[in-house]
Every structure is written in structure tokens, then in C-alpha cells.
Amino acid sequence: MVEREGVHAREAASLVFATAGAGRIVGITGAPGAGKSSLIAALIGQARNRGERVAVLAVDPSSPLSGGAVLGDRVRMQAHTTDEGVFVRSMASRGMPGGLAPAAPDAVRVLDAAGWPWVLVETVGVGQSDVDVGLVADTIVVVVNPGWGDDVQAEKAGLLEIADIVVVNKADRPGVDQARAVLDAMLDLVPVSSGWRPPVLVTSAVGERSGVAELWAAIDDHQAWLDERGSRDARRRARLAAELRWLVGGRAGRPGLRLCSGPKFAEAVAEMADGHLDPRSAADAVLEAPEDARG
Ligand SMILES: Nc1nc2c(ncn2[C@@H]2O[C@H](COP(=O)(O)OP(=O)(O)OP(=O)(O)O)[C@@H](O)[C@H]2O)c(=O)[nH]1
Ligand SMILES: [Mg+2]
Image (tube, rainbow, N blue to C red):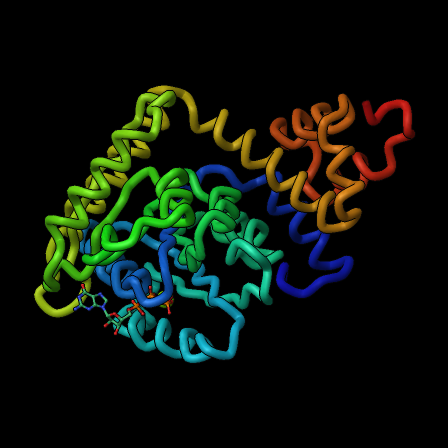
């Protein structure tokens, strides 16, 4: 429903905004074909074994080239479609840069508010622009493949910067150790100001699966770390600020982004964080603020 635009969608999104917040949101991102959907299917299997319920939002690229992805995802996750503890939904990203659909943050909140304890969000990482998955996820898993280190480009480094966990999937293929070595070397260069150094894991998501339990363990570790350090709220607040910037920029373009540094903006973010103002109403407030309050 939140995918459709209009007044009802907006009301629903607003209601849901006030009730979401208990779910653990995990973003799974990486290049097309890296094995994100296969890994998610494997993760679902593990979660069900330990009695946990999982919802998946797969945000598909809208380019005709990847048009088959929707069907592919459905088929790969098919094993779980009759299980009431699993919910899988695909959503088109409609050509948005960053691989995130406009309604994706709302859709994630719907699943969260509906009581899904885990929400896995699949997005295609196309390089530096993929920071948008950071708008919705507490934990970001970046999926790469063996051979990753063969040509190091800026956009690859950009993807690493948003990673909380890095996975070398397709471990059954040659070049795993080399990929892991390059990843570790690159991650050592990223300053760990937060205190969390992303682990590099190795998985095989199809056939004789391997490393999937370790991946869940790493996700659990990261979630526990967020709770212990109390940075879950700080992250959530930063995400709300980013979402508001995204909405204001989307509605008012570049000039709109100038509104995103004033006191009105900070006030709107604080009200969002307190749950008093949903993102779209916050965007209205920022856009309608009188000139002198914009800072
Ligand atoms: N050999 C091998 N193949 C894998 C592995 N994981 C996934 N694949 C295969 O890689 C292909 C792509 O897998 P997907 O899970 O669809 O990858 P994806 O990242 O979700 O792809 P998009 O959603 O299209 O971006 C499929 O043919 C999978 O069977 C793995 O661990 N080893
Ligand atoms: Mg996929």
C-alpha cells in the first residue's frame, strides 16, 4: 500500500512510522549476481531452524537487463513461500540512483511495525551511490565474489565504506584467499572510529552451503554491539536525517538541499526521532519554513 502514492499511502506510512522500531533491519547489498538472493534464502533457512521469523524486501533493479531478477528471486526463495514465518516481497527501484525504491523506507517500517523481528533488505550495490541502503539498515552486509581484488576501483572502496560485514560469496570458486587478503588490507585502511571493524567472511550460498551460520553469528554480533554501545539510536537518528534530506532533495531539488542545514531541519529531525513527526510531514515542515527560519 505504501508503494502507491496518495493520501491513503501517506496516512498508512505515518501510522506505521509511530509504531516501527523494534525490528532488526539487515541490508544485503552487492553487485548484480553476487549471490545476495541465494544468501538470503540460506539465511532464512538458518533462521527458521532456530525458530525465528524473517521478512525479506528485495528491491530489484528496474533496468530491462535485470528484468528477470524478480522471477529469479521468487524462485530461489520459493522453498519458504508456504512458511508463515517467512514473508518475501519484491519492489521495483524505478531507476532511483542508489538502488533503493522511493517507498522502501516506508515498506521496511511496515514490516517492522507488523512485528517481523528480522527484516532483510536486498539492494543492488552499484558503487558509491549505494549509500542509500544505509537509509534503512542497522547492519549492512556487502557481498562480493572471488576475483574481487583483481581490479580495485574507487566505487569498490565506496561500497566497503558502508559495510558492517563483508562476505566473499561463491567460496567454491578460485581466488577466495586472495579476495579476502585484499579486503582485509583495504579494511585496515578505513579508520574504525566507531570501534567496529567489519569482519570478512567466506560463504557458499548454493549446493553444499558453507559459512551461513557464521554469517548469522556475525549479524548477531553486530546487532549486540549496536545495543551495547547504544549507537542503535544514534544510527537511527542519522538515518532519519538522511531520509529527510532525500525527501526534501527529491521534492525541491538542489535548492531544497540548502534547507537541510538550518535549525528548522535539526528541529524536524529531533521530532522525527521522538516519533512525533513522520518523514513526509517533516519534509513539509522544512519546505514550508519561512525564509528566516531556514538558517
Ligand atoms: N558457484 C556458486 N554460485 C552461486 C553462489 N551463490 C549464488 N550463486 C549463483 O549466482 C547466480 C546469482 O545468484 P543470485 O542469488 O541471484 O544473486 P543476486 O546477487 O541476488 O543477483 P541480482 O539480484 O540479480 O543482483 C545464481 O546463478 C546463483 O545460483 C555460490 O556460493 N556459489
Ligand atoms: Mg537477487
